[in-house]
Length: 195
Ligand SMILES: [Zn+2]
Image 1: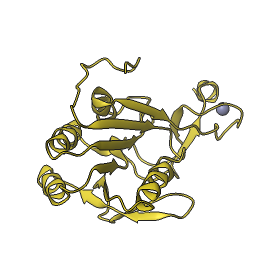
Image 2 (image 1 turned 180 degrees about the horizontal axis):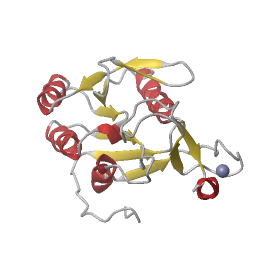
Image 3 (image 1 turned 60 degrees about the vertical axis):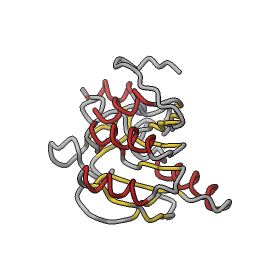
């Protein structure tokens, strides 16, 4: 499937479907991930959830509605390869907070996952940082993605349009800050008014 976002060459993996769900902060990406795994659980289908190591080694993901699931935390390529190797029976892999990975990790997840016979790899990712730059990891997932989903959230300022920017309201200069307290999801009109 083509996409207006694709500027890099597409990569097709035979036998592995790569899915990309994008959305601004607070649009419910982790909730959507947990919705998906709940359906697998009801059918006793095994799965693996991974997320990048950011500032903690907390081995769980949480949605705002209070649900949580255990996950594997990946800090190094070595850890990533070990985790994929330990889950060779799994056909479903979910990646939360994918925007925080280096593109090389995205490549490894896709290529090694394909080699291990993983049938579905579903990434959940922010597309834009607070300066409206596309995250390199998002671009890399986009090269592989066979299927795309977008989650919506209303603008936190005007409440009348869908948000498309992750606006920083406090905190430091890091593009990679964790958590949403320092950000507001806002629409393009409100963004313009703030500039
Ligand atoms: Zn607005």
